[in-house]
Image (tube, rainbow, N blue to C red; front, side, top):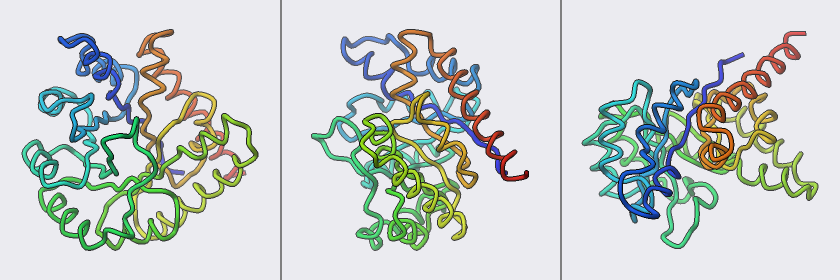
Length: 253
């Protein structure tokens, strides 16, 4: 059974900072606290509209944190230039629309092969691992491999929405994640997952043995209001490890 990492997304620390301007709360401090609590990496999405994370945040994170930096970004020439300048450990390519509140659905890799393939190659040539944030469908997974990605991050939003609403679709959405993770791993892709995960929804995803990293942000930043960021990250990491260990025990029994 593969180990399971936690990447903490600090975007919405910056959202709070930007609501009034100034420097507080500091995303870099949040990243350092998350690492102290057990985060294995830090994720930050530099949007084209600079809604939360700013260019200066990326520079400081790259220079300062002692864990891998995963830069989420759109497939644009501006963002490729920024990635090549800062050279984060990884770039996760995501869809982006100006009107959206948050990332809605996965990247349409299957419809952008001709654009993605040279884009991915340029980043990989610079020593940057490339991930595509996609829905867990065979078409998108196979297209991600064709485009040359190292990693796929499976969108868990539909599963989380179904789990919270109790509309009966939870098991079907979880099955899509299980099958998608198995297919991706069989194609030689590293498998990550994320979007909308909470204390109540993380365990079934953490039990999927092919998944090696979960990226979680909004929930942890929100929970930090009540318990503090260190405690929130610590609890999430504990729930992930407990679920992965339980799953490993079942598989070896």
